[in-house]
Figure 1 (spheres, rainbow, N blue to C red):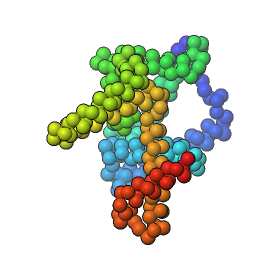
Figure 2: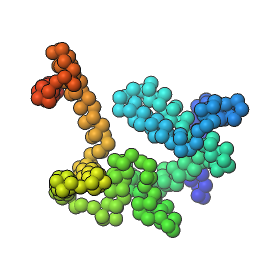
Figure 3: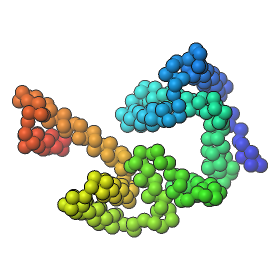
Figure 4: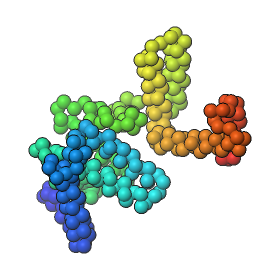
Length: 282
């Protein structure tokens, strides 16, 4: 990136790719503009706001993750389109309020990616591995936070993130300045302590708010353990959810063979079928 300017990346796309991408995006922007037209648009789309659309944006991001997890590539194409539509929807509403336009969104991320990859675009040669890039990325983010006079270490971790993901990010950020357990066994001790506090609170008739606080502390500690073990807690919980669905399905099938439904069975009957499903899984 000569003289600090933006690199010319046109050579990374041939003319056909550029033309097709531009035409498709221009059409999508035109569709969004028409949908939001107060007179000729869709009443539902016109009625939406940032707040009402945000949950759909989150849902679409999860559907992208689900398609990746299932390795369903045709579905991934569709889900990525749905997610892109969410970006265009937010940008259109912002343009209507003279806040910013879609081009501003794209330009902002372009400049951020170039700024945070100096080893690619500015000739910096000290980043040779993915681990080094991760460290360099976090350092650049730290510098950007420091440039904001009122920014604390945790202030830009989005509050709207799913709680489990936000817990991981908060813990990583705190760990970057040394505020962290020094080993996984120490975290296990903390988990046992937090579990004991839940039992104690329940035995003393604690209010729901207190129990909620104690359960939150336990979940936060378990998330910390996953981080120390280099396990993605979200992925781990998704896998366990899927395993639960499979094994409960085995219970339903086993009961159906006996002419029963789960609501008609005893816990012991269901537990026996659960254990049988576990054995079959091995």
